View 1 (cartoon, rainbow, N blue to C red):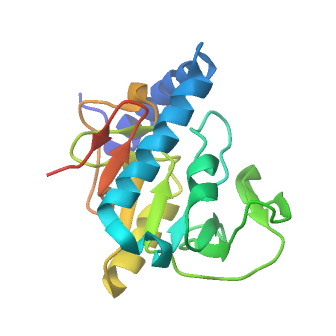
View 2: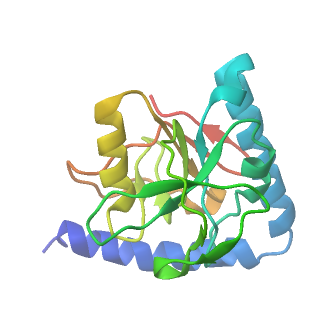
Length: 195
């Protein structure tokens, strides 16, 4: 008997949380995260050529064993925002962030800015548990990024860039029609642009 899609995702979440945790705690992980941030910055600079300063970039405040994007978002020459969970089963909001912004703990323990200044991102750096080369990601199961990307993409072009350790790649992420693909995945050693 084959597992249902939710069961497949739940099993993969558990396995990949362990794999990500091992990568995060491994010797040399800080250097690998620096490499990933440098890769991300270079990729964004190349993608947007001289216009990167006009691009609104969404990062995230890392939690658990998520790879830390703060060096890349701190170096971004344009406006930066971070996601804020409004309510269960709702799209994310994005509030302006600067390296010296005062932060508080939001839902699910993610840190969010105290000052609320909502802006709409054009590029989202997306945390994940697992990804595949087709550009699909496995998150925590709340569907926040899928709902958000669907809404943003309905209004115009937006880029979603997964940010992960190489060890988070799997052959195939189980997916359904509501799962939104990533436009690229950046790891410490590689940038994957799905076909």
